[in-house]
Image: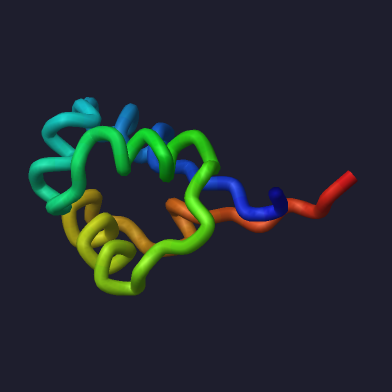
Amino acid sequence: MPIVVRIDVELARRKMSVGEFADRVGLTPANVAVLKNGRAKAVRFSTLDAMCRVLGCQPGDLLEWVEDD
């Protein structure tokens, strides 16, 4: 898939666990795993807003477009 999710990078930078992130964003750890592993088909803007608010980052820090091979 040409969209790569970089949540793991931002969590590592902040030394934040998936559980803490999930609690603060309002997601289940399982849904965070779906996002991290690139299995999500869509992300609500409200969820993206909450993730950016918790991590203090921009959407472009979490999502990256890469060209298919």
